[in-house]
Structures are given as C-alpha cells and as structure tokens.
Image (cartoon, rainbow, N blue to C red):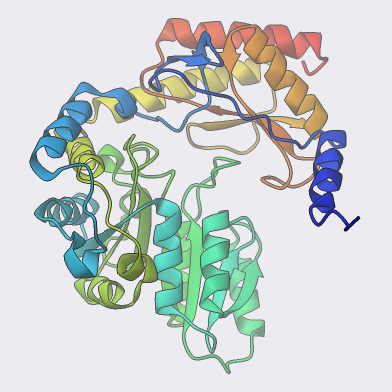
Length: 394
C-alpha cells in the first residue's frame, strides 16, 4: 500500500491542537454590527475591524446596489485590458484628495496592494529595511521582490539607523517599510523619525496604514496626516476592508510613482479589477468621512473609556495607543479558554496566538467601534471582569 502523501497534515494539525494553536473558525450570520450573530447566537461584537460601523451603513449599501444596476456585478477583465471603469478612476481621484497626495491606484485588497507596490519598486539587487513586527502582507511583498531583507528593532529609529549603517553600500535602491498602526499591539510607528532616517540615507519610505485609515489624522486621513508628513512619505498603502467597511486596497503617493505601478504591479496587470459594487461603497465611505468627524470622534471616546476601565479592573492592555486593545494573557491555551468563556457569556472576541504573535504573547484582541454604545461597553467590561476573575487573570 502506498504511503499516505498527506500524513504530515494529520501530524501538524495534532500538534497545533496539543499546543492550543489550532484555529476554530467562527461563522457570522448577520451584518457586522455592535451585536452580531455568531454560530447562531447574537453576541456583543468586540472582534471585527469595523472601526466606524460602515460595514452595514445605509449609504454604503445603497451605493453598492446602484452600482450593480449601472455597471453589473463584475468588470470581467484586468485593469490594463478592459477592466478599468470610470468608477475605478473616480475612487482613485477621491482617495488621492482624501489622502492629500497627487494620485492613488486601487487594488483588490490591502494585502495585494503590498504585494503590488514592494516588488515593483525594489528587486534582487536592492535592500529593504523592515520593522521586525511588520504585517504578513509586507513580509510576503518583501520576499516576492527578491531584495535583501534587513529587519530593524520594532518602532526603533535609532535601531534602524544602526542597521543601515552596518549594511554594506553595495545595493542599488533601498527602502524602509513599516506598518503605521501595528495590528496586534495597537502601537503607532514613529513615522516622523523614520522619515528623518530614510531621508538622511536617500531611501524610499513606505508605510502600510491599514489600521490608521479612518482612525488617525484629521477625519481619519491616516498616519501621514497624523504626523503632518504630506509629500514626504513616498508610498502609502491602505485598505478598504477595515475602517472603510468594504473590500479592496490602494497605494497613494506621487503621480510619477503611481503611473509606474500601473505599468509594473503584477496584481494590476494580471488580476481582475475590483467589482463596481465594492468601488461604489468605498466612494460612499469617503463621502461619510469627508462629511463629518463624528464617527472618528466617537471611536476615540469609546476607546478612552474602555481602556481606562479595563486597566482599572486589573487587565494588562499592553502598549496600545489606538482603538486596538490587546488583553495580554501569555499562553495560547489560556487565551483560547478565555475567548471560549467570553463567547459563552455573550461576547465575541477571538484569541490571538502564535504564529500571529510571538510565543508567550497570546492575547484577546478587542477591537473598538464607533457604533458601540456606553451600555455595550459596560456590558463588555462586566463580562471581561467575570471571566477574568474566574480564570485567575485579575
């Protein structure tokens, strides 16, 4: 009898379960709201990236429906052949204005946007200086580029300077790349100081602002606006799947760089364009953000209240300075049990463990939203307090 060629799967899955690292995927049966149906039960949602509540916003839904009637359900082509519709160009103009840059190019997701931008701008004879905690999409984009990857200490401009100084100057182009807001810890990259280092060494500076858009800056314009670095950050990557509540991604910067990406970025050249409904909903999200800062202001009010109360209860919420609130627990089995008990009590917040975060740094990641009421937050705090005491965390 031939050997089982997939026996390794059973062994690795068994090991994941033994270590408490096996991911149990929950099923959502309702829109992403403050209260969401998870596995058939309505629970308080502290888990999604729906920072501003736009994922079920009536203006976005109406825009998507109208777009289907006008443009159909799909573009049926890549952007460079027959897939560029006028609505794609409209979104890119709106995002450039929103980000206060010359131009923007939209992509199928934020993950794809990193895979589009990085390999287009650096190659096998070049070097990338990458924050050691950068998101997987940045890591994969760096690997695809075939450039040499040099990691620098997390959010440490002096450490970046040291690794640049230590690197032999035999490379062609160089790039510094960092997340803007780090999705697991909720801390903000010191982009102003990273800019100074990159400028001093004539390096391309790129930031992935996936968790900063809709959160930081004036009216949610992001980390570049937050630090007042307009025209100084060469490449700004973003996503429409978090605060914007939809799907897709974009790269923003100078007209010169964006024109180049349209010629070189493989996802732009070889993957079908984003659907008209998604694009229309993204434009509607820009409308909402440009019309008022109310949702962004409420997000931060909720964040300040919840974090302050969690600390008062005795929970360790790490070093976060954003609405991302990690509840640090240490080992993955404890985090998974904590998450399971939260759900039993009516609160949805998933455990995060290795390899998403380092071993020994497992946590519950709480995601605040502007649509959580004061009563929702108090309910969540009560549940966390009960489970925390039950499991000996507080």
